Amino acid sequence: MSADLGASGARADAPAGPAPARRGEGDADAVLGEIRDAIVRGEYVPDQRLVEADLSARFGAGRSAVRTALLQLANEGLVERVQNRGARVRTVSLEEAIEISEVRMAVEGLCAAKAAERAKADDAAELRGIGARMEAAVAMGDVLGYSEANQLLHQRIRALSGQGTAERVLERLRAQSVRHQFRLALQPGRPAVSLPEHLAIIEAICSGDARAAERAVRRHLGSVIEALKAANHQPPR
Amino acid sequence: MSADLGASGARADAPAGPAPARRGEGDADAVLGEIRDAIVRGEYVPDQRLVEADLSARFGAGRSAVRTALLQLANEGLVERVQNRGARVRTVSLEEAIEISEVRMAVEGLCAAKAAERAKADDAAELRGIGARMEAAVAMGDVLGYSEANQLLHQRIRALSGQGTAERVLERLRAQSVRHQFRLALQPGRPAVSLPEHLAIIEAICSGDARAAERAVRRHLGSVIEALKAANHQPPR
DNA sequence: GTCAGCGATATTGTCACCAATCGTGCAAAA
DNA sequence: TTTTGCACGATTGGTGACAATATCGCTGAC
Image (tube, rainbow over all chains, first blue to last red; front, side, top):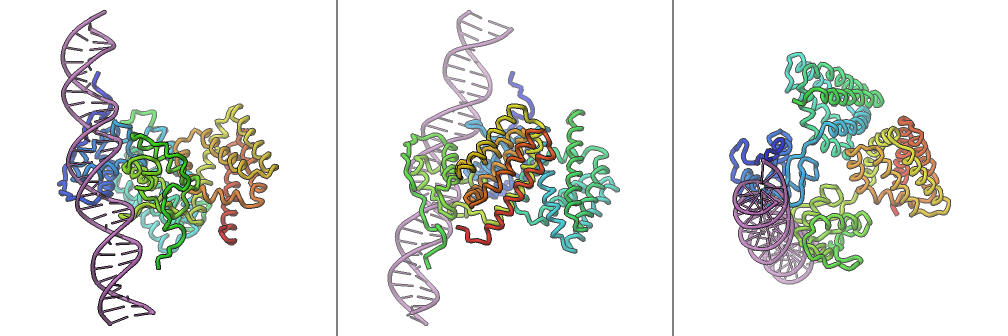
């Protein structure tokens, strides 16, 4: 039986060849960013094999560069490498997505509290601007725009916290769970639920109430976890 | 002016040559573990240069293996790499150590709560055993033994939580801050302060009270943060 | 018809070498 | 005496080739 599940057998040759740009040589970790983006963007589906030679040709970089990039990505938890069997896009299970959200709840709560303490007037204005964008997106049914604003909001809060360590941890977790996050955003009625939660977070931070900000973030991510669990009961796609 | 600060100029040749063991060849990421241990154990001091050729000779592995190991360690935050200038042991500042402790407070709180919910009778017995070990160590003034039991306790709680993601995050953070943790343990009177906090954590988990467990962990790590801040005022060594 | 054995192929892991880059020390000029 | 320029040594980054290893398909026996 040679029919393996998912895309296990698919090769990673140019899925959309946007001009290899004939990278002469040199840049090593530029490739890292490109491959990471391709994975996060969903250009490579979970469980897809990432063959070094293919990527090398796809990005016009030496196999050496691709190799180190895959090493990094494995360490970031985006790809899985097994000895002598190569790398493939790591699939994060729903259980793991829930775990990630739980950790995010704890750490983003911390960030929100710190952000509330440090937010200046113009920071508050920016956050409220993002909130307005989210409201508009929901009103227009612009799912993609809402998702973007969502990510931007969380990112700004992280940055505002001034907690570099938390920021790095969260950024790593976000990259891993981006697929589940996206699937969640596509669920009908989901934005209507999360919008008021987001607005509550913004208000708490803007009013400088650290405790309230942490609570609002925890409530929001708790709702995300519930939504993920609910999504388990109806078929993934 | 060729006198640079710290150990910046020191080379990384066999600081204590414990028989290179003449590794024939082959194993790549076994070297990773060895170098990581050496750094965590303090065999290489912060800011010390890690020259690929030296490590290669020291561990009897190819420069290739050492190279990938350094890549990994850089990603783990244990070493710092700059283009064309090599790797050196990363120094985590006191501010960063505090940041790490803050994140630990959030994530270990989560773990403790989950551990309280999942702990079985024999788990409780084990935790209480560790608690007894800590009490004995403090009574005997056995700083090293206390430190070991301390690490063991935190590790067991992480494992008990069944939260793999949190576990990985915490393990990475621990490796980074081990030096500060150790310096803290050496502070006179510190064990006497942290012992009751640890015992409170153990009791909360054993009694299955998730909220209390989380609170106890947060209180403990809050005290760690205070101690770190206090250590800032008196000379580092 | 199924399964074990086996050779061919694809892919990764490692090594030796070369090029590029940086730091350092010396020498010459101001 | 100080500063600037320059060359050398040390070290890393990258490439190509080769060895090691796993996968796949085929053949043949039970």
